[in-house]
Image 1 (cartoon, rainbow, N blue to C red):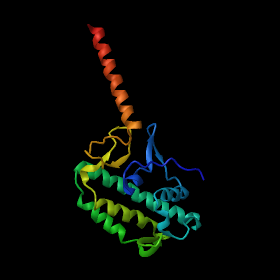
Image 2: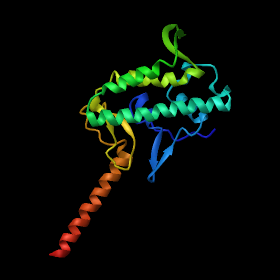
Image 3: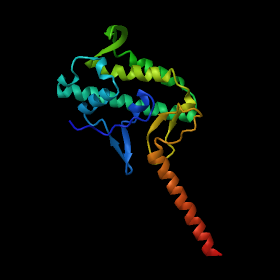
Image 4: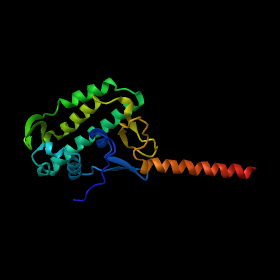
Length: 201
C-alpha cells in the first residue's frame, strides 16, 4: 500500500483532518481517496488503536459508506472553520449541529494497562468510526481560542492550522512552501515595479 502524502501542520487532529485535501496546481486534490488511505491516516494520527476490530475486514460497500460519512463530516468541519475565522468566534449553530450528529454514534470506555500504568481510553466499533471524528471535533471546538484558528494566507492554499506559536503571528501553512513562495513573488513584483519606474525617468 503506497503511503499517501499526508499533511500534518494543523497542530490538532481536527485541523489535520480538514487538511486531508489540498490544492495542487489549482486543483483540489483528495488525500483520502479510498478506505485504505483513511486507515493509514488514522494510523499516522495514533487513533487506529481506538478501533475495535479490523476496519479492512468490512465489505467494500460498508467501507465506502463509512468513508462517505467521514468525508461529509470533513466538509462540515471546513464550513465550521470558515465561519469561526470570519466571525472570530464560535457560532452557536456549530455546537447544535455537532450535538445532533453525535447522537448517531456510540463509544465506550476501556481500561488499558501499559507498562504497569492504568489508562482510560474511549473505544469505537468499526461501524461507529465516524463518531471518533465527531468526538475529536467536539473536543477541538470546545477548547480552542477562535482567534488562533487560521487559514494559510496564500490565496491558492486551502490548508488550516491552529496557531499555538508564542506571539500568534503565524500566517502560512509552511514557511518552506507558501511563506517563501509569496515572499519571492512579492519581491519579484517589487523589483519589476522599480525597473518600470526607472525606465520612465
